[in-house]
Image (cartoon, helix red, strand yellow):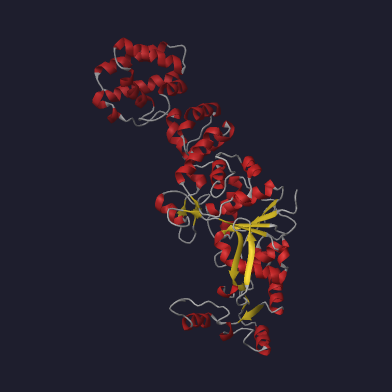
Length: 508
């Protein structure tokens, strides 16, 4: 194990896991495993107002489904815990106070009313929401503008306060992004971010730097939406641990929807999932469908996610997890946004259904039948069904409608599709064919088809004119796999019974 490569995924347990989050997990995981390093999951639960108790379990269930298990986490343990930020509160306080002592941060005692007044008083036509930055800090109530005696008194009294970073004016901050190259920032356009909140909990800015240092994170892969926060983080690294201790950063491209960044709203509007698994918002009982419940294989899910912003330099599209690990390279990740195409995602799933080992596919199909309150006990028969219909299934959920007629007699037949052309001549044909089927010894698809065609020739009827009625008799509608293979699989007795029952309906 290469201890010098340590990467992390640090989700906030506030809701469902967006496919952008899973892709971040995937790129972290692939990089770690390609370099024989470690993948860590750290729970960033410092925002207690948005914390959802069920969300942490949900996150680990998602990772378990896609097969991206961490080496260290709140569940898996490790040498650098605790792995929940809420359990590391005292650690952050120490570093926040160090920053204040060294003059890189300050205590701010402003009330919510005073902050709101500041935003209104300093609002301009070009700036509708004034930030707490170098241009206004000297007009506010903080440890820079107030006397040491006042500040110490307020601290002893326990007056509510936060700790803010003191962003320098007109300082150029830069770093080399592994995807985007050299990136530069002017600190004057960045506000004095809160580092430690009034409840003693850190904000993301302080916690992420302290935790990455203490957990010896070597590389950070995160979405490009975090780029504007980079100057704050770079300065915190510089002030606390030295810039040389900072991990290498890579800001991943956005996943784009029909318009802009892919969102849950896009999924609801266009009918596709954007979460890894089903998620129900406890506040409003709103349910959001996940890729798992939609019928995606985890193998297909991570395959198409990997290609949202990365390729191996070839035209190859289908990769197993092991192949992704072997081929993954951060220099093949694109800086431009990656367009999400749900139809392409379904194509990946269809291809993986066809290539997945039967024993694995059988277990997953059985689960989806169970979800429909239909239990399958004959494992051998299920294998035959899967082999017969899998090429027709794009999603795992397709297996039920594409094969339920193989397990039980259809309760409804699409009579309307054949009645206009149904006549006594066809009725006589099927009545006679039933007698031949009764005597048939070799019950296989080829022999059944040969017998059927021989009898159509004898009755001087086109085979095509009889295939649709036969399909509706056996399947119930104008769909399904080759009809003679259906007959072979449901066996002689069931085939004859279905034809006899259908004839009664057709002739009524």
